Amino acid sequence: MNNTVIKKGNRIVMTAAGLLLIIASILKAHQILTVPILVKGFWESWEFFLIQIPLEFGLGIWLVSGLFRKAAWLVGTLAYLGFIFVTLQKVWIGAETCGCFGQVQVDPRVTLFAIDIPFFLLLLIFRPKGEKLLGSPWPSKHHFLSVAAVTLLIIAIGEPILFFNKPPDKTEKYVVVKPESWQLGQNWNMLDAIDIAGEFSEGISVVFLYHFDCPECREAIPYYKQMCEQLTGNEDSMRIAFVEAPPYGGKDDDIIGDTLCMRGRLDGGKIWYFATPLVVVIENGVLLNWRQEENIPTSLDELLDVLAH
Image 1 (cartoon, helix red, strand yellow):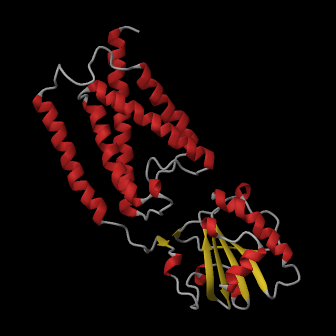
Image 2 (image 1 turned 180 degrees about the horizontal axis):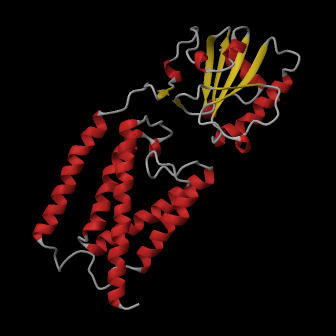
Image 3 (image 1 turned 90 degrees about the vertical axis):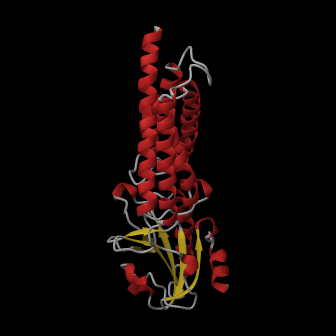
């Protein structure tokens, strides 16, 4: 390819890569302003979003502006290389969405093969030849100052808005479930939202709350099915129920299969935000204990130990 084609291709690719980052940062900003962010480690936390959004937005503006083109190209290429590794990890764990575009759910495999890898390769192919990393020819002062001033102004206004406007924990559309706020010895406040709550009115019940697309739930479910088999003939002393949280999986997404356990669903009229699996132990509708994610019991002995404490 001649230099003219490469230069033109470089402008197109860098502009497209930058616009994609700007769009992604705006969608993430909309997400943290409108829906709760569940903390599953720092890299998916609300705090990290506050750092990521301005950096992503600033890099997007830099790529589009053409300022210090070679330096912008280098940083942008490294960023897309990083995106590849992050998306690969999400493909590996079976995540439903890449999380790149806020509430717009995109399969990580689509993101990896249609966005991250193609943009990384295009940036490598159409690199800015014949330009210094930094140095002359310097951009015009007007161009540099106008881009820098507008970008910094947007970030300076946007960051406090994102910081001080966390969405509420409960609205007509969704509920944030915070087990740490539950009071042991009190009526469990989620019973009214479960379709088989009547089954829990007497005796000890173990409620296993799950999402159909939760990898940790898939790993834990066989243990609870086995516990149900172990309790055969002693259902009056303890019962186990699988309760699916919306959005529900279809026939092909049924991760429970045949089981002796009871099965139910959480009210589909709202979105329920909580980390799964969540195991709740109640007696006559009163909350005795709960465990979440990697802390859930995986054997009958462990479950009995939870009951004892």
